[in-house]
Each structure stands twice: as structure tokens, then as C-alpha cells.
Length: 220
Image (cartoon, rainbow, N blue to C red; front, side, top):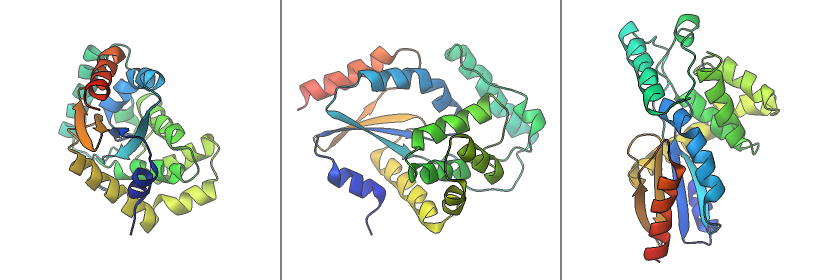
């Protein structure tokens, strides 16, 4: 059976596809947002952007250990040092029963995609998590976010944990691995059926764009 990925590739007539491989609860993806927005604004018109979910952590009801909470909190501090102005609300650790589970948020992105609101849901999840200290591992929070961005919540709720949505997520994770994703976010440019890993620069969109331009101008 064809997945959405297969169909998108079959329908794409250009030779250049830039795969953005991410997880909506990935802190480095959150830090990359400003540069990523600028990159997309300046991409050549013959490059199609294709979002793929990589899936950081499977479904789990197990609470994070205090050691893991501390470790992730330290990651946030490191990101703030390396990518200035990245905002984190450290109250998250006080206000929530944190679980190492990002698949629900990934499925929420797919469910929102069915209503043509993929990017809106990604940003809603990130802002809820990192700015407002809400837990996107909880279905109740995801349904609340769907309502906030104007989705049909009944339809969203039905699709959030539907088997089709689960299989789509697993297909995207598998495809991301086949592409050679190296952590999140990853940028991989398919040019004339060849895949090129694009180094991420969190502070300089121009550096990323320069690499992309080099590939499409020298390898066509």
C-alpha cells in the first residue's frame, strides 16, 4: 500500500526535494525555528520542502526519572547558550508529570495535516511545551491545541490515535532512517535522485542556504 510519502514523491515533478526531519517536541527543532523560517523564505522556487516526522520517543506512561528531567533541563540551558533568544519555560518540570513520550505529539501533527494545518500544529505544540509549560505528551493537551488553532476537534480526536495515523508515523520514521537522518532536526536534499546531508547552522540561515545552492548549481 502506498503511503503519503510515496504519493508525494510520485506527484513531485521537480528534481529537488528538501526533507525537513523533525519531532515537534525536539528542543533543537524549537531552537532552529527562526533560521528555518528564513531558509524557507529564501529557497529557490524549484525546491519542494517535505516535512517528515522522525519520532524521538515511543508511547510511554512511565514517568521520567529525576535524573532524566535534570538532563533534559541542562540541554535546554545549553541550547540557550548556543542559540541565543531561544525561550524555555523551566516551570514545565514543576507543573507536569513528565513522560519520555513524543509519539502522541507526532501523531497530532499527522492528524492536523489531514485538515491542512500541519505547520500550525507543530508551532502550537512547541509553544505549549516550551513557552507555556504544558505537556504535549497528553492527548487532552493536543486536543486543546487543535481547538485553539481552529481544527474540527471531533475529527482530530478520532484521527489522533487511529491505526492509519499510527502507521503513517511509523512509515515516516522508517523513511527518515532510510534517508540517513542524523538526529533532529535534519535537512536532506534530494537532487537528481541523490541525497545530500545539509549541515544545520542554528544561527545563520545563509550558511545553510549556501550549501543548498552549491548542490543544486553544481550537481544538476
